[in-house]
Each structure stands twice: as C-alpha cells, then as structure tokens.
Image (cartoon, rainbow, N blue to C red; front, side, top):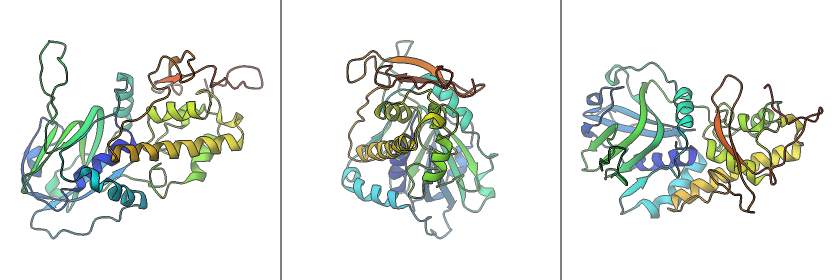
Amino acid sequence: MPEGPSVRKFQLLTSRFVGQVVAKVGGSSKKINVNDLNALRLQDSQVHGKNLFLAFVAASSPLGPSVEETVLQKQAVAASSSFVQGKQEQVCTQSTPPQEEELQELQDSRADAPSAAGELGGSWLRFHFGLFGSIRANEFSRASRANKRGDWKDPTPRLVLYFESGGFLAFYNCRMHWCSSPVADPTSDILSAEFHRGRALDALRTSHPVCYTLLDQRYFSGLGNIIKNEVLYLTKIHPLTQGSLLAQSDLEHLLDCAIRFTSDWLQSKLQGKGLHLHIYQKEQCPLGHKVMKAALGAPGGWKRLTWWCPECQPAVLSGGGDLALGDE
C-alpha cells in the first residue's frame, strides 16, 4: 500500500481542487454517507505520514487560509508544477505488497469515531489507502487484466467527487472516517521538515531488531515496508540486527539513508519516474547473490515480508553468538 511519498503525491492532486464546491458525489463506500459531501467546499488538503486529510466546509463559508505547508511540501509543489499542469494524472502504488501488509495497515489505521460532516464546523475526512490504493484526477481506473472470473471489470472507486469546475477526483481502495482535525505529529513524519532525528535515533538504538523499529509509525511516520527493505540493504544491515548492537555511526548512516531514500522517491514521483528497487521482492541482489525472504515482526504483532541478502547483509551476533532477535 502507498507509503509516504505516494500519499504526498496524492495530496498534490487533491490540492488543485481546494476552494471548489462539490457538485455531485458517487462511490461505493459504506463507511460514510457520501451524500453528506454534496454542496460542500473543499477547504484544505494535508498529508501526515501515510494518511491524507481533506477539510470540507459549507459552500457559503468563506474560504479560510490553509494550514501552512512545510518547506518540503512547498518544494514538492514547485517541482511538480511543470509535471502536473495540462495533463490527466494517475497515481498508483509502485508495486503490490503482500496481503499481510494490508492487514497490518488496516490495523494501524484505527481512526476517530465517525461523525456527520454537518455536525462540525470544518470537518476533516481522513483517508488511509489499502492494497492498490490510489487517487485519479479527471479519469477513472481501467482494468489492466482479467479478474479471477475472467471478466475485464474496471475497479470501483470508493468515492468520486465531482466539482463545479467540471473536474473530479476518484479515490480507490481506501478507508475513510470523519474527524475533527488531522491526527498528526510532524516530528515523526520522515518527509516533514520538523522530523525529529534525535527521537528516531533513540528508537533505533534499542534492543529491538531494526526492521521492527523502522516500521514503528510513532517514530517513522510514512516509512513503509518497501523503504524498510531498501534502506537495510543499502546500509548492509541484517533486518534482525538489534539496534543496541550497532555503532552510533551505523545508526546515523541508517537514518540518513532512510531520509534520503524517502525524499528521492518523492522527487522521482513528481518527475513521473519509477522507483528502482534493489532488494524488495527480488530473487537476487544487485551483486547476484540469492535473496532470503521471511515474515518478520514483533512478538504478538503482525509479520511483514522482508527480503535480505545474507552475503551483503551479514547477521550481527549477540554476546552469546546467536542472531539478535530482540525480545523473541
């Protein structure tokens, strides 16, 4: 499912419609009453980690100023202006993560209790995207292959917002909930200018395997399984290595690589380029070594499919000569 860079791109698509009034709605969602969005004005669009938030107000309400964007968001808008202008756009996930990952994301996306749009002055609609989650502007998704029944059936959007300008947004495979305000901590968002390096390093240097910690959204909001696999390979760190066994310089290098890879991925998306993967869902690493794959996760928690190269990412042993397994 979409990670931070993809959701940032989704936000750029929706921001083009800020200030416009919803003229008609559609979609298959049963979680919200889509008709509540009729005649509302899209007031603001924000992204925090893996979640997109859209603010709606009554059409008669004056359009208030949006919450100030971060420095990175401003740079992203500037960089993408030449790419998004004058063409229809499609935003899809780069690759299809396993079903286990969708279950984990759904578990992580517990939201505030839903409330009707009309009950709040300036309500926010929260989106969390699942497997194949995407947003399309001014076009619908079309089937790329036949389904299990052999039918070429186009995907059904969960929500479609038709605006008075004539344009529309189609949202696919996402969970939606009304909330009073965005649930956000910019200091944990790896794409935010306010990202807190010190707190992230403190989390990494614990006795937990680094592959668990990197997916902890309390410290690395927006970082997902693709980024986790890639940065561990690029830094030559075995996924089950306890952070407490790594030197401070190695932890710094891992954090720098995670920030750089995530930012570079966003810039590639803004330029319409694909993501070059080194290890994720690969059978061989770039050096030709056989790649290992296993479902790894904290005890009692969800397991995430993880790829690593035993030769490029050698195991770090604990004092007893065993592979570091954290609390397991």
